[in-house]
Length: 156
Image (cartoon, rainbow, N blue to C red; front, side, top):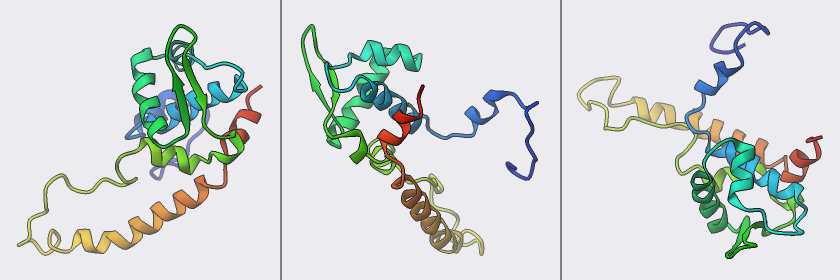
């Protein structure tokens, strides 16, 4: 059930694409899975990852920069350059990946402060902070239970 609607197989597959505010997390998991499946034998170049993701290599390189800052991948330059995992896939959790590539919390608040003279506006952020923090904590806890190795093992 999504937004009160019971889903069946007749819904178009791309319905859920429009629900995500950012695809960076899923693309990062995809990219790291490509690298993990290479087994660390040789660096995987951004064009190989980009082809699998069906995007431009520049997009992958930007994403990899964030993953490198989080010490999840290492890069090497030159003709045989590319990316390798910095740690074993079993020690990289989805929570690690999420924190590396998502720069905002799960829930985005108002871009501008709500009207302080409005009875709703002056209280809504304070009221929502506890349930939203609880939901973010539950998400982080759930993501920490799955590793990159778990994901790669499910790929035939």
